[in-house]
Length: 197
Ligand SMILES: [Zn+2]
Image (cartoon, rainbow, N blue to C red; front, side, top):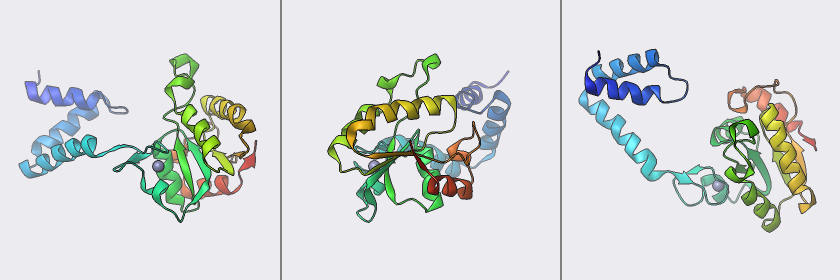
């Protein structure tokens, strides 16, 4: 039904999360109407994306250099680590402008039913950091979901005797809500009202 190249692009879009076949169709039609220069820029940005980006060697945040701009910033409190599920949570917390520590990106949460175990996530690096860096506080900024709770519990158990105070974001966030979708005010207050666990 579709011309071959048209179909191929639809399939690529439809394979992305949250994009159904109808939306994929509309996006591809939109791109078809764009001029060549815009399309080249789009293709180039995709190419550069993978070429230029990597994980920060220290915190696993998305970075263009070996260490991300947050880890490299000496004006930030290097003794406070905020542990998040993914890089989008870093962006969300940064937008509040209320946090001056550094981060650790786990790359997901513990989810036994989907076979995401502790080996797939960056727990070991977190433990190493808690041992080697002079960490005073570890803030657990997991989403308030069953998996987020399980992950927070796991980290608390493993870091308990490493000397750092362990806190978790206050429950201002509705249960099941995502940190990356929380508004800045809610996120700021749950950060300010974090509790020791
Ligand atoms: Zn970093």
